[in-house]
Length: 120
Image 1 (spheres, rainbow, N blue to C red):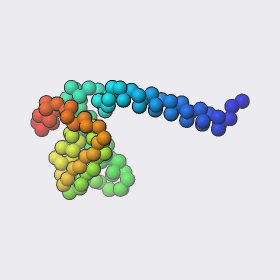
Image 2 (cartoon, rainbow, N blue to C red):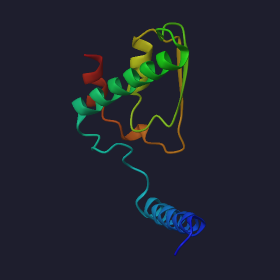
Image 3 (cartoon, rainbow, N blue to C red):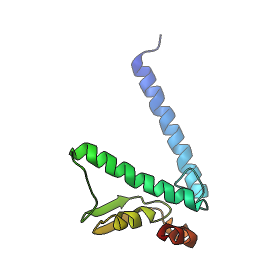
Image 4 (cartoon, rainbow, N blue to C red):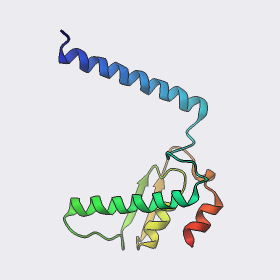
């Protein structure tokens, strides 16, 4: 009864509606939690950052067809989120330089405890 074109338009407008609702939510509450868990869970956040780096290296290895290392590389991270743990880890793994750009200033919300635990 309904065509594929009808469903494509329907899903498009439903998607726009939810995008609009999300924009309203972030305008009211602000963007404060880039992860599915609170920043106070320090050990979980550190584990999460290490997992992100491992996934980056895995994808880079698959893409380039060779074992990739971070040694001597310059890293640019768009949207680092609530802390600079990923940047610190890439530098610890031998990256030459780390740069991060984010529209939302969430770095100020990072706990000192996070960095103390990360450096252990």
